[in-house]
Length: 379
Image (cartoon, rainbow, N blue to C red; front, top):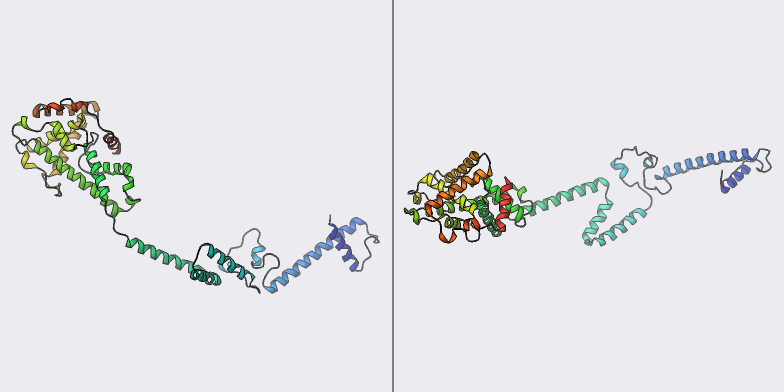
C-alpha cells in the first residue's frame, strides 16, 4: 500500500493532468489507488532515466558513486573483467578527492615519521597514472634487491669459531670413547659428532648454517680434523704402550685407557674392552717388536696413506664387524667375546694394583651416558 506521501503526490499528479479530484471521481477507491501506483512507478522510471542521461553528459553518475565507472555499478553479479583503465579515477570537475587524498597522505606520512623528501615523493606518486605508479613500485623493489645483494656480498666469510672448535674436540673425543660406536673411521664418527652438536650445542651453530653447503662443509672439515688428530694420538699411545720388550713392564690396559680418555673422563670396563681390542689389532697388524716403528704420522699429515692411520682403523672396524657377525647380533655373545680379549690383555700386560677393581666398579658420568645415547641411536 502506498505511503501517505506517495498518495498525496498521486492526487496532485491526477489533478494536474486535468482529471477530477479522486474523491469526486466515479471511479472506485481501489481502482484509484491502483492507477496512482502505476502512475508513480512510471514517473519514477522516467525520472531515473533523466538522471542517468544527465549523469552521462557530466561524465559521472549522480549519488554516492561519483568516481566509479557505470558498468561496475550495473553489474551486481560481478561478471565484469577489470582492466587497468577501469581502476583509474574518472575525471571530475572538482578537486575534493585530490585534496582529501593529500591530507590523508600527509597525516599518514607524519605517523610513520617520513622525511619531507619522502613525503614529496609520495605526493608525486599519487599524482601519477596507474601505469606510472606500478612501474615506480617495481623499480623500487629492484633497487631494494640490489641493496640487499650488496649487504650479503659485504658480509665476511664464515669461519668456525674457537668456541665451536672446542665443542667439536669435546664431542669428538666422547664419540670415540663411547662403547656404542660401531666404526672409528669413515662417515659414521663424523655423523655422531654432528648429531651431538645439533642436540647440545645448537646455540654455537649459526642459524640455517646447514642450508649453506660451503659454510657447513667448514664445520664438517673441522670435525674430521678433530677425529683425525684423536685417532693419530691414540695409535701413538697404543704403540708406546708395548714398546718395552719385557711385556711385564708394558703399560697395563687401565693406564692405557686413561691415556686415551684424559683425566676428565671415567675409565670403565666397557672402555677397557674396546682399548684391549685396539691393542690386539695393532699387534696383529704390526707385531709387538715392530710397534715403535709404526707410530702414526705427525699431526696434520694425511692418515689415508698405506700403512697410516686409516689402514689401522679400518682393520679395527673390520674386527668389530667380524665379532658382530660371528655373534649374529646377540649382545650377550658380543660382550663375552670382548671380555675374553680384555682378559687375555690383562694376562699379558698385567693389572695396575690400585685399579684392580676399578674397571668393573666405575660407571660412566652423566655426560658420557648422554653421548652413548645419541651414538647408539644415531646410525
